[in-house]
Length: 352
Image 1: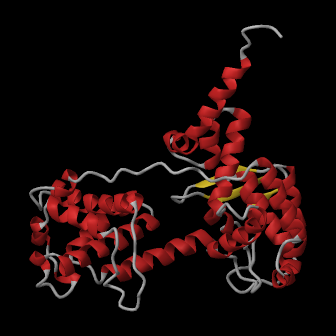
Image 2 (image 1 turned 90 degrees about the vertical axis):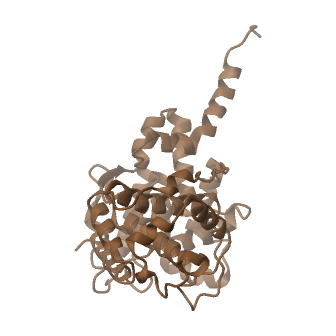
Image 3 (image 1 turned 45 degrees about the horizontal axis):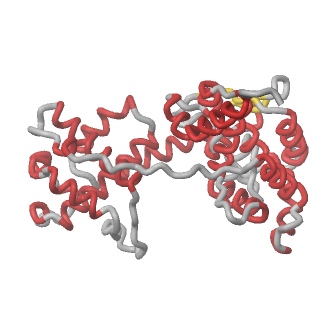
């Protein structure tokens, strides 16, 4: 079983476990959306709706007689109005998760988090409204929080070069980090070169198997967000980094279940997303300490460089695996301004 299939199956099992604690009517809803949503999306709905149901029975008088969210019935949904949902939006700004008694950390939601959680409530109520099991969908009366545009943090071209130099040498690492660097340098170089040289997501990177790589065409097969298979092409620098690492990787003895994995941890298990996030942070902090660079920022860096070189937003969208080019435009709209500024300097009114 491939890595991505195993992860999806684990998510499905987690969803089934969570649904046992949910109101009975929720089973109908999740069966209905099963064919048109990915497991990760349904898991996100589980988290969001669990939070909403717990809010109802702990914060809203109409529901406080319920001892557990499983006691909420479909007729109780009729008690929900736009005011309750707006109060829920305010609650999301700062709360403690009552369903996790061991958690002592407060949770904070900004506009994006609130918007997603409102969308989940809308989806649930819309389904039962369309099925004519409730009389209205009050969530549609609540405005989606305005999401303020954030500045896109990325590396400049010279900073990418400095990052690769640092991964190669480890000169600025601490003494303890240098001890690990001796064993992971080629692996880390391959990972960061692949992320920075293709723009793939970190989840796509860790899911790669050895037989997904083809040096005949310099390409790698990945599973995109949503479960679709795609082929991503890489250049000569990435090719060399991968070949250097494979010379080491093929000598290792992976743990059971990780035999096909391309990238392994020091425990010889398939490397995880968190581990890659940590290694990217480790190296980038020595090169650009004022920038908080994650694997996704390397993806933004690649997208920006590709757009600067080609000016083709549709090509950037295709390479990054965006289903909607508007998603790409939203991320790289500021680059249009840079090109417009360049255009203003191209035309000369007087010959010098």
